[in-house]
Structures are given as structure tokens and as C-alpha cells.
Length: 418
Ligand SMILES: Cc1ncc(COP(=O)(O)O)c(C=O)c1O
Image 1 (cartoon, rainbow, N blue to C red):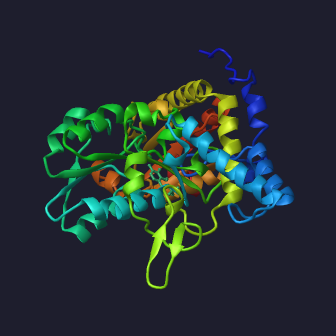
Image 2: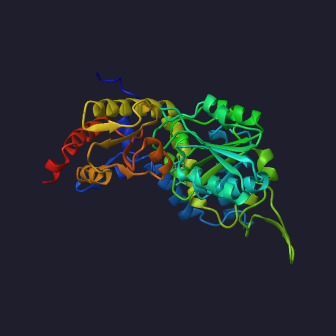
Image 3: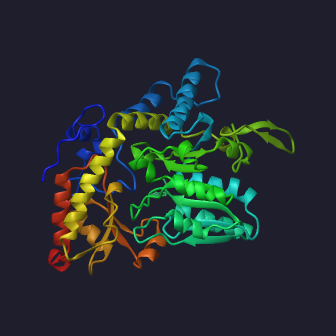
């Protein structure tokens, strides 16, 4: 059955959208690249590259350091992206947005700055059994530093941490609940609004790892009442090297800086210093200015595409892919029910994922094989590693069909090789 044609928010077709991405003209092993690894990083549209080049070519000076007109232009461009990000994710105020290097650094910032100040010996930190390493190891380390207890919640069979599961893990000693918004392996979604409300009843804060969540739907951080929400620009058409951290103003205002140096300072005396207000107190040194400007354009690009287009494309493509794989008895799928988030974790029976990925690669298809920086989820699934196809709104049904043909061949691995 053919789906009706889909148009972006600004009335364009998928073919027109694909023309925005220079990498979709690239080849892999002399075949047109089929990029099914967007969960690792998304491709970048030309307009984002142009915005960054334009900064370097015509106003590429440092921010908050000059009183000249060009310095103001760069500073205004940089700071306007803070306000734009706040609006994009439903935060109330621009100064609730901190620029970091990536999601990983944002989560570490919370663990050191909020965690070290609030977690005492015997307190509890709740995570799930299926967190990405970036939202697992910082809490493990915090627990060790503070002699606190790490409570690890097992999600339901779909990979979701339901409110009931979280409720059972909370206690009066819980200080931090750190959970994914969308899982990078199972594509499961957590209901952050319900989970935040529960965490608050226990007197804890909710830290949300939004690295994959931001890709699939627009967050509403103030409405959901999450305390922190961390994500990376590079997963949603933006540049690498830039993370975004939302923190409630009341929390950021009382948190201590965790890195020290230029621009995060107020007064530097001989033996002591005072620090700037949040968010600048968390932004030591020269920031990723071109990347911030590129991220501003990425948000404008996503607004032109629209999350409705993204959602419908993902759902159609991933459903086609899952249904195709389900017809192959050589394939085991670990998350058949999460197509909306366009991540499919699977294995080809009897074939090591790295060998299988090599077969896809020879056919021009880029997918991921391994533990996906998520060994906890591998333990949850009882496997060493998996294949992962992660799709995006710029993929096509024809690409999915080619992927399914190669998956059929890969099921007969020895025949393919010899
Ligand atoms: C769910 C999740 N959390 C955190 C991260 C870490 O993101 P980054 O490498 O940009 O810090 C990723 C990246 O794959 C992810 O998928």
C-alpha cells in the first residue's frame, strides 16, 4: 500500500528535502550512500554549513570580549541562539540554557556541580538499566564520590521506565533521578512529565537525557517540569562540538561552577575569585561560536521541515523496515514496537554484527554495529552487541527496500562471503 505524499511544514517534497543535504550525494564503496546511522549523528543541511561559513567569513570574532561593532554583531548572533533554544524547547528564559561541548559534558556538569553539592553519604541516585553511558557512568562516579547508592530500575519489556516502575524505586533518600527521554538502542520513550512529578514527590530532581528525544519530538521542558534536559546539536542537523543544557533558573542560580577561567568570572583577587551569574559561570573559555550559530540555523531548518513531517516519515519508514525484517526468519528484532522513534535494534542469527555491518557497507549502507555506547542495554537484552538501523526524515522507502534485500542476503552470510 502506498502512502499519500507528505509535505514539509513549508510545503516541500521529500526529494526537495534530500537536495538540502550534501552528504546524500556522497558514495560509500562506489555506491550512493544509504545513511541509516542518524542515531549516531544526523547529516547537516547546506544552510547550517553556510551559516557557519558566513560567521567565519564576515564576522568571525570572539564574543563578549570586544566593544567594537563586529564584536557586538558576533555576540548578538551568539546570544540570540540562547533565546532561540529556550523557545525551541519550551523553556521560560534564555538564561536557563547553558552551552556545553555535548550531551555528555552537560550531564557531567550536573553530576559535579549539582550532584556533589546535594548528594550525601547514604543518599540514592536512580537511573535505569538501559541508559547510554553518558547518563550512567557520571552517576556511578557521583555515587562513589559521595558514598551514595545507585538504584538501577529495570524498564518494562518494551524498554520504557513506567511511572509505576519509577515509583517503586523512589525513597525519601532519593536525590537525583536520571533517565533517558528516548533510548538510543530500543527507541523506547519515557513520559518525562509523569516521571518528573513522581521524582518531585520524593524530593528529588529529574535529569533528562534528551540526546535522542529532541530528534523525534519537540520538548516542552517547562510544562513537563523537568529540572534538567541535556542534548547535542549534532543529532538534529546541527554541528558537532555543541551541547545544550536546560536547567531551571532556580537550580542553576545556586550551582557552583565546575570549570574555571576566562569569561565565567566576576572578580579575580589574589587568593580568591567570585564568579559570573548562570549561565555564563558554566561557560569557561572561548565557546564553540560558529557551532552555536550553526545550531541557530539548524533550529530554523527544523521549524521549516516541521516535527509532523519528521514524525510521519520516521513512522512510515521504520514500520516498513520492521515489517520487512519480521518476514525474515534469519533476523531477531529486539524492539519491534518502537517504530515512531526510527531506531531498530536487531541481529542476524549466527552472524556477528561487525561481519554483518561489513556486508551492508559493501552495498553502500551505513549502519551501526556494537554496543552503541550502551552496555547496560546489552545486559538488559542478554547479548554482547547488536546491529542498529537508525533512520531520519531524509531517508526514503526505496532505501529501506534496498536495506531489506541486503538483510536477506546477509542472512546467508557464508554464501555472501565465499
Ligand atoms: C541517549 C544518548 N545519550 C547521550 C548521548 C551522548 O551524546 P554526545 O556523544 O553527543 O555527548 C547519546 C549519543 O549517542 C545518546 O544517544
